[in-house]
Amino acid sequence: MEFRVVSRDARLSGNHQNLTFLIIDRWNDFSFVTQFQMTVFDHRGERHDIGYVKIGFVGQTTEVTTHEKLEETFSELDSSFFSLGNSINFYKNIADLGDVGRELLEKLNDLACNPSLIESIREEEVFAVSLLRDTSLSVIKGQYHRVLNGGKELTNYQFSYVREGSESYSDIELEFDVTVESKPSTNIHAIIGRNGVGKTTLLNDMIKVVTRSPDSNGAFVDRSGARDREIDEEYFSSLISVSFSAFDPFTPPEDQPDPSKGTCYYYIGLKDVAKEGFHHDISALNEDCCRALRSCFNDDAKDKLWSNAIECLGYDENFSSANLMDLRGRFNETKQSLRDKQYDSAEFEERFLEVITPTLDSLSCKRH
Image 1 (cartoon, helix red, strand yellow):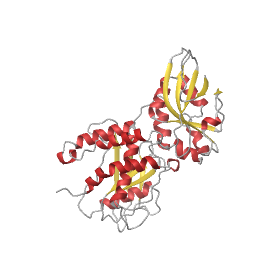
Image 2 (cartoon, one colour):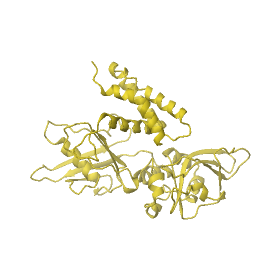
Image 3 (cartoon, helix red, strand yellow):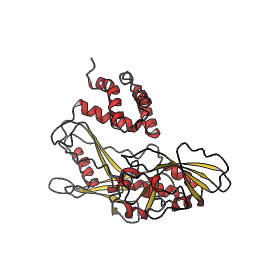
Image 4 (cartoon, helix red, strand yellow):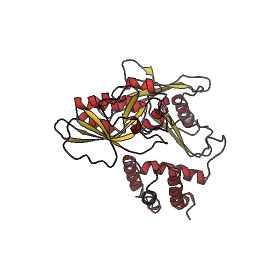
């Protein structure tokens, strides 16, 4: 199997066999340009559109794109290169090719195919900024690797939160057992209790444990193996803390958005993490919402989830009157008017925020 790098407007016509096209995609991840669309022609000449793959190399900077570094035609990449598919569907499509698919990934030094390669390139900026932009180490080593080897996309898991007793706290053990596709769903859990019994304290300590805070009081334990063991820093893909209570004394940790460092952490709420004791005003909350909507509307899967949620909530007349579905239309209009700008550019953010601010402001005002 041979690889051929071609421009985005290249036509893949003609009879091709045992040939993989890497079609240059000039999408940039904070100035790193690493992405290609992969199309495979097998030994019968049958075409397979695999999906998007990102390829980086050791020492890469934003000054040099990956396609400038690659030969126009090659049989395999040398050890200075590494690659990663952009989604679970990429690896499903590769798995459908059988041995040919695995051979392709081996020649591209794919990180899901051979996770042991990760340690040698973990500190590379292009790895953290570009290749890990839409995924995490736990997904690569777990879900992607599992699907590539014929396993299931989702699996059951069991873990516990444990805390030893002290003068201030009682001892506690909470078990979390999640079964795939169970009815009712087992991946949603609630902490219930009277005011002042320590629900918020408990949740906040869970956050401290996952973010490796030195003043945490508990621990998470993986119970899925033959022996219980404390979870490692890659067990959870990401942690999101949501709190809009103005009276919550908890000071959230700083966001940790770098997947190469383990579990990502994000705080959503009123508190200004950069200024202890301060809260976000309406304009700052609007900016947060704008960034979230841009990311959501640019991802088909997230867009669908958002639309389904808004449609469901729309059965409430007051919620329906807010016309939140119009926000997606405003996003598409902005995309049309700024065709030469990426959705995550400063110009796009400024324009999109401008057109959705009236709607967001109306949600923040009291209705009489």
